[in-house]
Length: 516
Ligand code: MSP
Image (tube, rainbow, N blue to C red; front, side, top):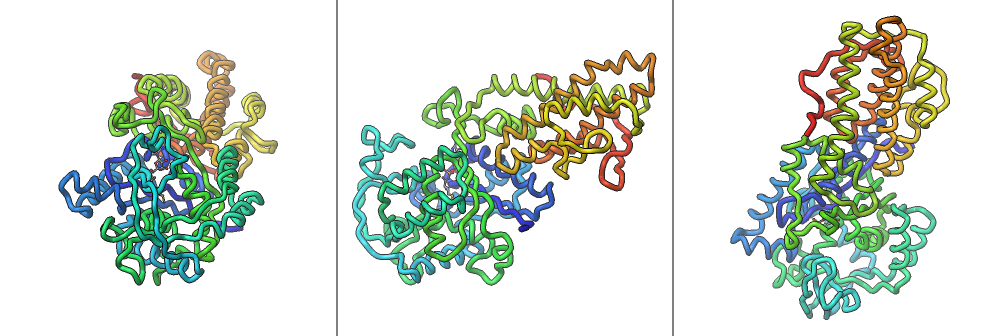
């Protein structure tokens, strides 16, 4: 079985500072990357920026900067924010990077030409700069692009076209037979409908005179590679495709999952597979399409004035709380609302009162009753085990307490959800355990039992610590700092199989999540 895993985010337009939508895609991809590293896969996690095209030139001109200086400044903002959110990318690709990206983009173009799929023609029609795409009259709502609420520009120009129409049947077959999986099902159906609508060939270059900022078409400096063709190639170029050092390409391609938002679905489910088929390159395995983050029910936008600044939340609540909110509260494949009120509500209920409180009172009991030293003993674990089995947190299996997280015995439903990119589902599984551990303490009242039966009390505390050990492991992809803190407080020593044998706990000096 292939033991590598390749996950990507879209590359972000470097025309402004990053916002919540960018972070959402990136946090999802980071959770997926961290999970696959945790289960032992050699993982490559790619993110980056899309720096060419009309939109960038216009924004750069408006600020009076040259395009390179302009994108350099914005890229720093992306990198800073990603770092404060603990985004564990392995490589950050920039389409203006002539050394790392251009050879790959040009190599893809050359392959499309070699396949006979690029031809010259005249494009007459409409262009939406916001989407960086040609748009048809049919797609307009009241004469405007429905996504950007702007009137598209009418252009007539000589372009190279890509013979997309040649590949649509083949792509439909590949989607139908599962060679390319599209999540969720509704988006898969949408793609299939799109493919039966007689797709036309797409313009794949723009005249250099109009768009001077981009990658010149090989052997024709009068044309620039169309920004989407340039951008999509990043998934290959970042691995060394088109360069001498292509070991990563050999090792990691095809991508296991491209994480994208619903607005760029057609590019990834139709145009990208067609390009790959034409170039003779294997297709990505999965395309995970998420919805939009809204604010008070509306898509975040500067004009509406409902844009949320992620930095403010990270400063106030910490990066893990932000990651938690996105993973738990926003439905992975639908739109989800982001409001301060809901953030505080969830933070208090599930982090401060839920997880944080469970950790702190268990540690306090461990310290007060056993000086922090809690050993495995053999009586009384059965009620906890039964409880966890009831909420399907444990698969059938022998052994003491709760089986090991990584071996799929523990939390089978968590693994199943993670494997199928259902991040919300995986989070629910973790919180089921947290609630079960809470219920266990409530039922057995170790704080009373300690007066009459120290041995049994130790056993109960042991069970909760054991459960928390696995909670922290399962949480690690989503809340890496919290997971690290919890395992630092538990200080478990492990047996030969990697299961906790004893705890030598340490109490935190401050609560994990201070109530707001
Ligand atoms: N540059 C192209 C992608 C090229 S990939 C080969 C692009 N960039 S973008 O900056 O506009 O968007 C990047 C990602 O952010 C997309 O997946 C988009 O769906 C996502 N989001 C932008 N706003 C969003 C929300 N409000 N909510 C959730 N994600 C949205 O498209």
